[in-house]
Amino acid sequence: MDVAEKVRIDHYRRAALTQRIFSDQPFEEIDCADTASSAEQDAEAHELVERIERSLAAANPRTREAFLLHRFDGMSYGEIAGQLGISTRAVTNHIAKALLLIDAELLRE
Image (cartoon, rainbow, N blue to C red; front, side, top):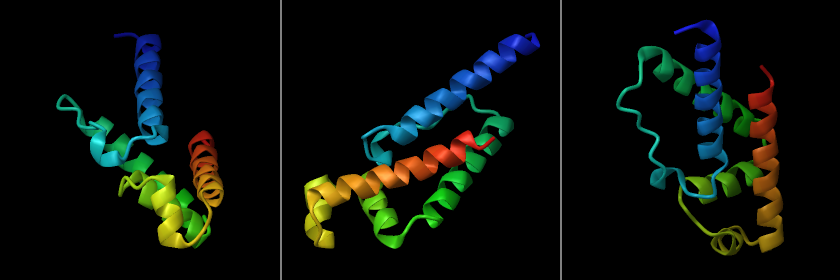
């Protein structure tokens, strides 16, 4: 396998991981397991998770909570709004802010 092909494959894997992160599905419903993953791929996935955690740590607590409730607990925007005592529009804004922080972190290579 030549260098260009390896770069192309790496780009495809990163794009697939990014798509999974920005998917509207809760993380539990997304099949992220790659039975053929190598140690290098596992290390890259671990680094990606750490970068996402870092970006969410920089978010204000309400933004982080809204994002985690939606992506990890699978709650709808309406359910989150009810739990946090805010409008659905505010939930939308918080989740958008979280995604922008994650996006900025992932583009910062």
